Length: 158
Image (cartoon, rainbow, N blue to C red; front, side, top):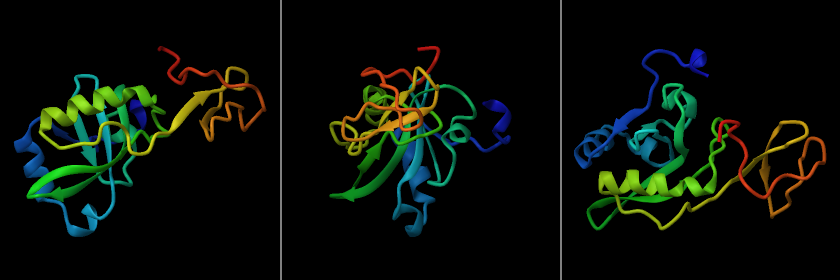
């Protein structure tokens, strides 16, 4: 995984309100109009990158606690999370990774929703090993037709 990451392409590390304020101040109106790529690194720190960045690059090729897309809005003079998902086909994080996202956002002092605003359910097919997005609770592999497990199984080390 790390072989595909270019040096210096990591997401911006955001571990405090001051770091977030500095980072967001440098964003253009066009950038703020769409969500950003995010990861929560294994040390619980939020990393942010432009939307079209790969999650693996944002994480510097390292493992993560969560990954997805996040959008920010201004509310009563404060920055808040307007939308956040676990949509990352690079990491395919479980919806249960929300707790890591919530802790990272709390550390930065951002108002946030109580869960992902858009949840993506990922599963790896036990038969063909392909990654699937489960839609409408249909736990069937779109590649080979096998049943998919009800519990998250994407990370082979988990």
